[in-house]
Image 1 (cartoon, rainbow, N blue to C red):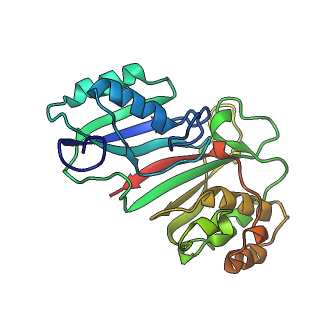
Image 2: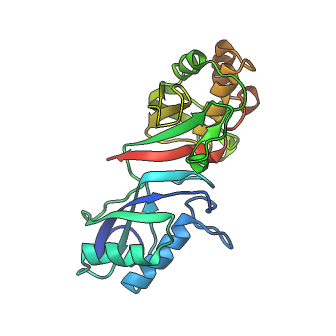
Image 3: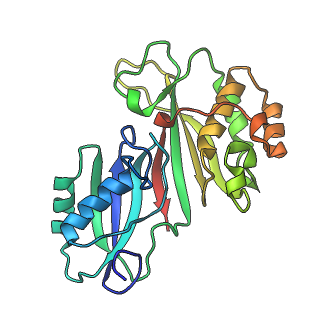
Length: 260
């Protein structure tokens, strides 16, 4: 039926970017402003029928996406990709952009991605990050970046990550495979001292609710002496959320790549 992924009609892929600050996450919620809700309303206006989107990454409230992928099917078989792109961007607010519209093979579903890559940015100077304040977490107090790297090295591999989510009870199991996890220094911009900004990159087939943010918060706790590297390892092994560290703010997190 129209409005779901798959035949009949035509199936489409949308590549998106959005700043999540003003939204209660991706997923449509009653009485809440969400990215899915805003985008589906715009799509319905353009294609003249209700549309339901599938998405690669269900970002939480305040989380950004610079390379999100969504898909939908509709009964119209003669949509023009360029006209659809222009029409959607004409209707959407300035914090959401459709980067690309393309016909997809029948049965393509955006959520069936092989992996997702997220980045989390932290800011270490005592002066606030005015230019990028909506996309970076200012960490208060000294942080040992070598300890950040040692903590990140504990994450790659297949294991139960229940310690990194408060919602473990909602999953059949919390086993996930982290393919990559590393910290790197962001190149200094004019007027920004070297070592001011660091970015954590993590890639996995899928993630648990707040998994990246709890991981980052725990690693910052290690870097600031509130937890040891061994303590973080023990927390991961325990599968208990209470043993891990703080939850980092949503604003520093962004989806940056999706692979199929």
